[in-house]
Length: 466
Image 1 (tube, rainbow, N blue to C red):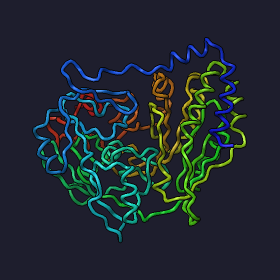
Image 2: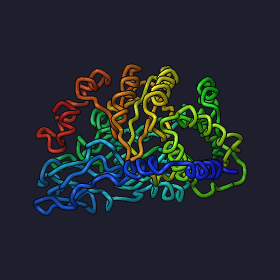
Image 3: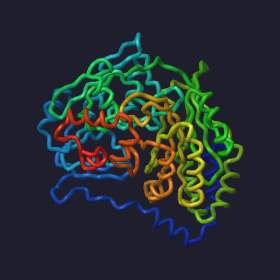
Image 4: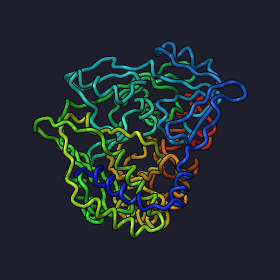
């Protein structure tokens, strides 16, 4: 029986035992969050991000069709000018009462070099569309994040990453970029041309201008075997360094209050294709919520029951091209905090994160995600010059998430973590400057391309010290 079926059946039986008072409390807590008005007093339309954590009423919205139109637009656009991407960031990178800029019309493959496995791509291309486009020319990106709905520009700007001991975040595969500065000038940069801008703006938070085009070093299409299996969390933590070293891609999801974790590995194979079946993660997640709803105040019973329900679940195996298996559908909305730690601190910090959640945040039911990322040399990359282990905690979009800042962020900061640029954190310029060796150099480049700060909304002004 699948994980989803076991948990759902167990949860359904337990729900029948719930009292009316408990059901009424959960119904109240599970109501939809209040939404901002669809328009403001001036008739401007609402924008909100995927998680519902940020919103804005921009005075103007623009969607240029090509680089020339973008270059003509930027000098006359009302500031702050903020690129919007897919709205998958949880922080206030996008909100503006000036101009909100979408690159959806600037998408698709420009050219490809089959011999060298490189491709030039328009920056507004969604990762979900880039996979099949590259596959059509015999290529795929070396690694992909858990979600592939982002635009390429947005993923690069926030340091979006996958997992694997030898794999950098997405920006590590960038060999050249075209960036339109706020004054409308088009800058071509690479390691050999305008190198300072290349190093500073590869992870640029949309603060250096607007990417129009990116050249990627890809790899030939590769078939991988994806295996998802449940392991006792203590066993997994003890063996994690070896597991991470022995698989091409490895990550795991700690299922809090269960004693179990889902280990996910990808390894190169020449076996016949065996496509993955229908997504079951969302159903499993909501079943874990049902257990939470009933046993939030008796975590010991909750853990004992979940452990029995999740016992003897067989592995799930799929074989296909990597770009089809590395990313997943995530229809259940959530809020997320993720930090990237020196890799030798990951397991120690994760043990403390689990302990704090299971002792002091009993309403949590979302998994805790752990990944590994290779170092790179982008100045504002969270992985700058160090191999990193990431830890990400989540809350359902209807649930409070203050516990992340109160209980979890201090642990991740003490371990030397750098926050994911697109995910929740409380750091300001002084904290960040201490974490990034090339911080001052990056800010000097940013001021040189945007001396008037036209790309900076209030959040970025606080973040960058502008």
